[in-house]
Amino acid sequence: MAMLKDEITVVKSVMMNLDTDTAMLVTYQYHVEADPSDPAGKKKDRSKSKYRYLARVFKIDDLVKKINELHDEKNRLNKFKWPDDTWPWYICAGYSDNWKVADWLATKLKKIKTWEEGQKILSGWQSGTKTRLAGINEKAKYEVDGYLDNDGNQVSLTDLDTLKKLVGKNLMKVDKKQANA
Image (cartoon, rainbow, N blue to C red; front, side, top):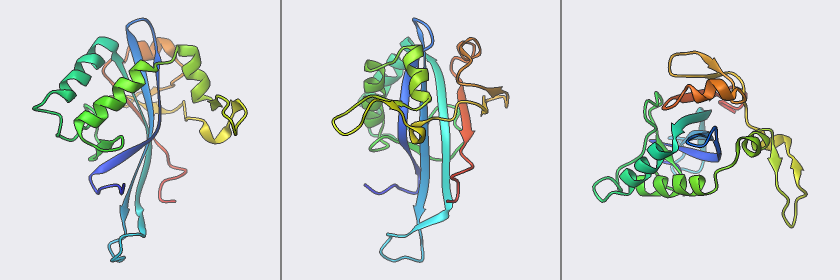
């Protein structure tokens, strides 16, 4: 499926518990648009490419309420945007419709990791498969330092005590090394 001009796609994500009733979702996302000079629409306009990490801390009960709200008949076909997100695009997790994002969030909640497991994944840990040995994959690592909260304060995704104080907040880090690649 092609990315629409009003969407930003989730490439990878992990949800982890911060304590018994608080969790954090960490995502890596990108936005790219078709080159308007290509009538076939196959070339990409790399000058408009954007990459970011976005994390959100929330109470698990609030997430369950949000999932139910997104599934509600009156909301299900609307497009989803993170609360307080300053970037203009809708989140695409397969599709950007609320029901699809709700399904994705419900799956993440069902497969939620412990704090320790989540930190291993952020460090690049990948479990073994038929074709891959378990271990650290440098390309699977998430950026963990230098995130900014809504007020512009720097936060590390490894600082459990600080993260617990940021319920309902977005934490964002623009991935400059890949932007405009």
